[in-house]
Amino acid sequence: MSTVIIIPARYDSKRFPGKPLVRLRGSKGEKKPLIQRSWEAAKRVKGVDRIIVSTDDVRIKNVANTFGAEVMMTSTSCLNGTERCAETCSKLKEQYDIVVNLQGDAPLTPYWFVEDLINELERNPSAEVVTPVLRCDSDGHRMFMEDRKADRVGGTTAVFTTKNKALYFSKEVIPYTAKIYKKDELCPVVHHVGVYAYRSTVLNEYLNLSEGQLEILEGLEQLRFIENDKDVYCVEVDGKGQSFWELNNPEDVSRIESKLLENNID
Image 1 (spheres, one colour):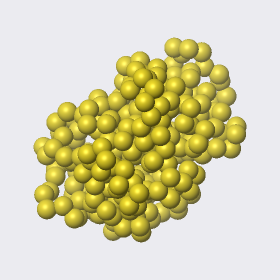
Image 2 (cartoon, one colour):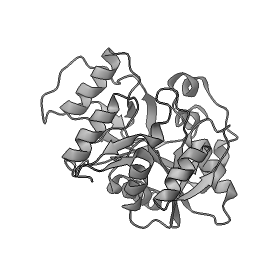
Image 3 (cartoon, one colour):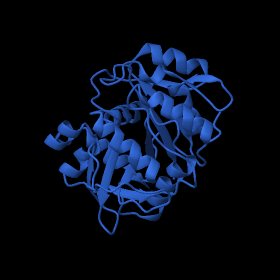
Image 4 (tube, helix red, strand yellow):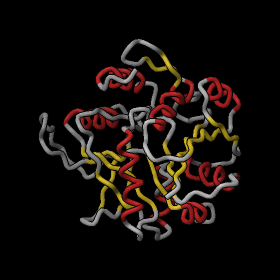
């Protein structure tokens, strides 16, 4: 199946303005803008036909051009990354079977997370939207709880059925647990990784779906599918010992840099 990865990036983030251009130090000491590190993560994915940075800000476009990315300018009216991906696809001459939305704030996304999503859409003809979830280790659960204690809006958690159909996604830590988990102890909380793979048909429908109350309250674009009775499937992925976190707040810069060092990503 033909596949395009789109990296939506906007400058005016409410929690962290200018986030795509924040420079992050890698394992060898070199600093690169966040958007470049996300693009480099996309480049590691096999079997992809095209990678596009989609933005509404010329500052991001200019920086992305310096490291060789293909850039498409999109509207400032896009409410989220899925809308930006849909607009990008509407402007392309080519039609792709699978569209991957690789969020521009997740440079630690391992290539196999994305490959697992593509494989799931190829394997399961009934799935239209798939997204990865990663079982929290003690460190990941601790960071979730630290953010909530400090009243920071951080990562996203997910709950799903025994057949991996998503029930809900939240910025709260769900399911509730007061336990402090030890290293290598199984934790019931799963971290939703901000990547989506869509069949192009359902992505085209997204702009015509009503924005729901849950989507607005949580600030989570995937809830629009659920609120409109569109199934979203969670694909549980294996971190393979590699740490993961997104850059949600300024406090996450040091977290990401420590994990770039830990994961030996230059």
